[in-house]
Amino acid sequence: MRIIITGTPGVGKTTLGKALAEKMKHLYINEREFATEKGIGKWDSEENELVVPLEELKQELSLVLGREKDVVLEGHMLCEIGLKVDVVLLVRLHPELLEERLEAKGWAEVKVQDNVFCEGIDYCKKQLLKNYEGIKIIEVSSAGNKEATLEAALNALGGLK
Ligand code: DAT
Image (cartoon, rainbow, N blue to C red; front, side, top):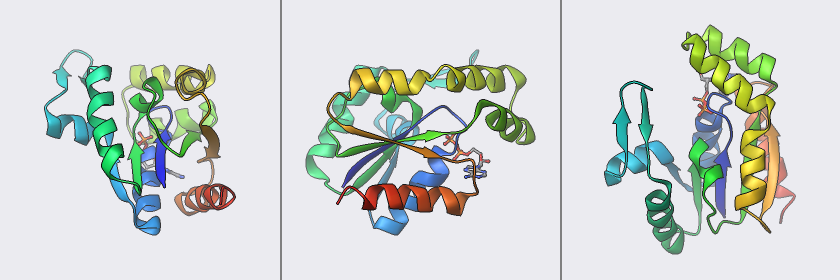
């Protein structure tokens, strides 16, 4: 299955993506590592993040999707680009829980508040509805622990068969 995992930074995408890919014996690709490997991102030291040209990322990932049929692609930028996949998992976390989790992890306050805001206004969901028309979008809560989140994702995917 070609699966995308996306959502606001900090909600638990990477944790779920790695566990899901391992369980389903799928190839796992993190957007940021992928962009870095392909040399298509530039580090913005002021924002302290990798800035990636989305069209180029889309082209490179489309090549991968053309040759791999069992793959988990994971990252927050994926909601911005339409890709041909079987299903999208949108990881959700209540903004207050996200705030608690990120503060406990020592994230900078400005980053915490940016992400809390994005989650609160359903930013990723709105982007997905625009960019992934006709593709099944399933919301998975990461409010439980990592095992519960994985189980929820597996159950949701099992229901597609
Ligand atoms: P993302 O890839 O969305 O940025 P992550 O997987 O790196 O998020 O997780 C951010 C932090 O939250 C990390 O320290 C692990 C923790 N975490 C992830 N999923 C969790 C879950 N279901 N329950 C509790 N903590 C979780």
